[in-house]
Length: 217
Image 1 (tube, rainbow, N blue to C red):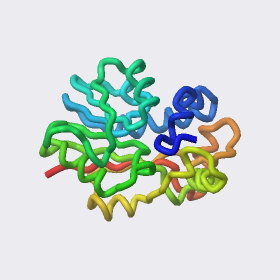
Image 2: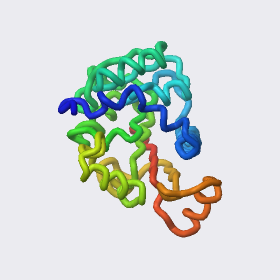
Image 3: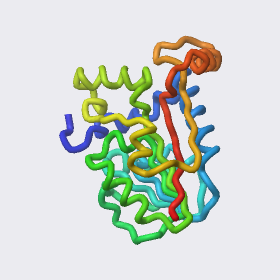
Image 4: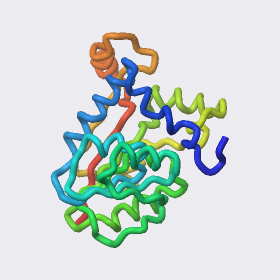
């Protein structure tokens, strides 16, 4: 176990789950809601860019990727070499004020030490009228119940994760400009996943993913 980097031992195989039938369905659903919310712009920052998965799917003229895990960053550089990669924490962004049109944090707050500071830093580097997109693993969902159980057993990275709700984000950032939810099927769903997801939504399940957008005024 790497005490400083919970993703060090996971980096090599991190994206492989998206190649499974369930993983493929989930990542496509996540991409749909991000495409709905991500605005046009020239300068784009992703905080916690990981292996560069989203950087390969959403193209902007100028891209900066912040990633604290050295191993994840090394892989990310290979996957998205056009981006400027910086090894740093979300709480201390080595970037100038009001530099970006769009800032994305997707399932990142779960693993930072100081959520308020991370969001404050993201807003600081955002231009006026720019958009902050924040995606979280919904603390009320059945997926997070699974992740908490894995964390209780010491499984990385869930043993160091903290989870939040839409209401937590609103308390921290105020009312959002737009929002989306995704992944209503349970972790043990069986194919066809599209039907399982519709059934989960109809049953009133909480979406595993919540994404909101906030404009800087």
